Image (tube, rainbow, N blue to C red; front, side, top):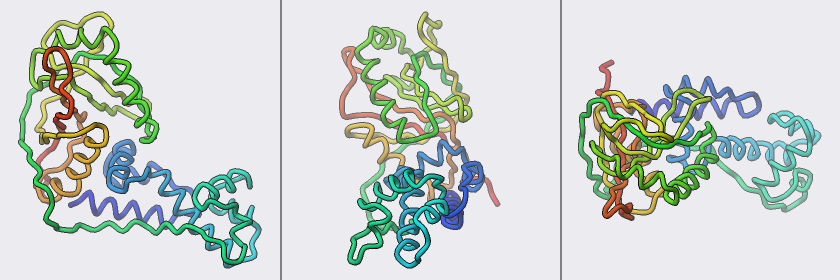
Length: 288
């Protein structure tokens, strides 16, 4: 359950710094993972991006400040990190649907976004089937696209990349190269550093590298594998959320943060719709 405690620390840090600079490096330290992976976790758990959550909390507090004080609107905007009245007004209106000056009108309706309160509830939910796989080094051949630390941006990039790849000759080339486990077309998220984040579409193979393809090696790892039925990416996000909130806290394992693997089986040279697997690397939890 360490990640839940880490998340609580991050939420407290954000709350304490709504009217000052929020340092992503500090968030990463408190979360004990890369800021890229934390933003993914945050989005999966809360249903909103980290940036949007911070904006909503700041604009919630800004609305209270506007209504209970006679401070200048520009000063309140500056307090919450907006150097121009125009940028503050846009952010405020995006959250409340009215301009900051309008918020002082009698009877005006505004939106309250409370601080997220994270707790672990034990409830009777759907069965979550899984298996543990220990694999030696995986060698992947495929194509890749660059990702960014902004999770929302990546949610647009990845589906478009799949669409382009499925329509291109490289897809059939990849199918011909598949030779080792895990079998199928793979979607792999790889984080090296903030400037090197990639999403690969490829296959696990022992074939020699071909022109136009890139090679990726994933080190020896232990994996928890979840089978999944449903449309991706929504269903993939659900798997990650349940992994974090239902499986990981009670498993005795920790998230190892190696590349995540989505496995899409192929039949008759076509992807099988509706069925997939999600491979997430894990490691034995360290004893305190």
